Length: 584
Image (cartoon, rainbow, N blue to C red; front, side):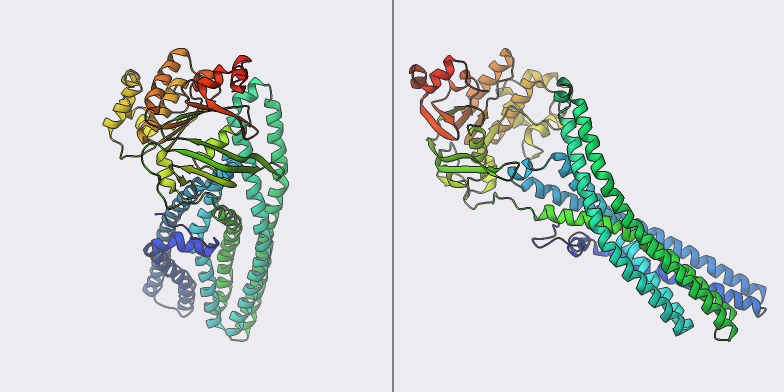
């Protein structure tokens, strides 16, 4: 069940409509059960009062036993209704929560690379999982606990009003004052809980980054520095957590005052009205009994409002995340099939630095690659090679100028056709904890086993596949594949898509000679009949390129046929070759 809250602002109401709306039948059952259990709970003191009056009037033993059995039946029915309603509430809550988590994950995955580079994976996990878990309390508690308590308070006030309008009016006023004070305190507390959730996301973001860098931290002897950062963030979180808990506890103080005032009036009214004959003895009992009953829903209200403060803070953060919009928008023109030509027309690109200032990567970069040719990109770190790859795969859009694939501006191309027609092979290959089949197909069940086996044979991976215990169903995970196997896995993924443009970020730079030879043969097969852009860190890689661009500072400082540039002693490429600075 997936039903995003829509394009407007995300609020408590929009979340209810989006995720509880599809479960109307279950919600209706919960409400009916809740109303029945509340009516039975309000009726219980009436049955006890009737029993007291029957004893005072000397009713027969059979009558008293019948009243007692009626009370037991009502109490049992109330408990059964509560339990069933609570079960239904949790079921609805988890269904809604999973749908919200699914939508939030899909939304984050749709956002552009700039968004992901500005946030750590740990922070996003805390938002998608931690914040949504907080909202689970909102879904499960709202009806059964919060709404149920409100309805029970209204039922008790009605019962008190039936006894005497002055009693009902007094308790209604006390309850109203308590709820107003509760709302004021809760508004402040919600902001404090929002700060707490933000600190939580920062802390877990740091933990995630530290765990990912474990190897580097240990080899550099920087574990102490990492732990210092860990403790520094915990110390920053502590006062924020204390403030949130303090304001949450303030709600308990407010409701305790309301409860104390209510009980004082209950005893006062019961005593005075019984003495002047306004109410009977059983009526005096009902005043005290109902006043005592008010403590339970009010205490539940206190707990639920405190939970809803946290949920409110989480909802604000979820709304902020849903409010993020990708700068990469879907176009309407599909890319043509087959090998794609590439054209950069006066392309400029910049991004925001850590201090918010804009950093220019390239200005008015222009070059062209005819369909079916291989272009090598060479340059120092920061020259713009990876940016070109990101622009071609449309992880970003250019700030100025145009990038054309097959004559189509990438901003006008449909994202589906661009993802299908542009294949990117990097040095860092993502391996999922899943079967080999799922790792190859990215969980696309439409790809047949025959197609998978043909691709693996073409990449000379058939003997390796034969060693796996369950073949394509064998489970692999990060760390279980060698660097060469991971690179061949990445090539197989691209082979399966059969793209018209392949972008290679030096896929053989970290391989042994035997595996490198396998990868080189696989690349020769892959590039046949396709356009390719090779980001070169070693000279051997660009020998297969028809042309080479030498980049510096986001601009082309040299271009030409590979053989011509290497044969010209004065060329920049030949100089890099001579001094061994075809950079990594």
